Length: 97
Figure (cartoon, rainbow, N blue to C red):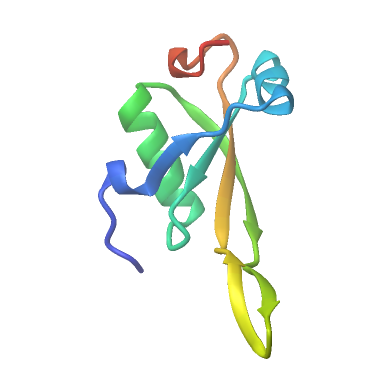
């Protein structure tokens, strides 16, 4: 298991129209480290933002490749997003929702 600090697990909040709309349902979206698992994500969110995490859903995206002549180059790295569901009535003010 990867030894990550809580502040290394969460990279940044993802603020899009869809993720801001999900905050009404107590769901917050973060970009997380590719090595982090659900337990580490839940602990990091609860420690940093002082909230109770009910569940964590994880979405992994594969790297995208392109061509440059004969070479195959990486255009977009692999990323990992986590959708964190909080207990009812709790919110994270960092989203600005």
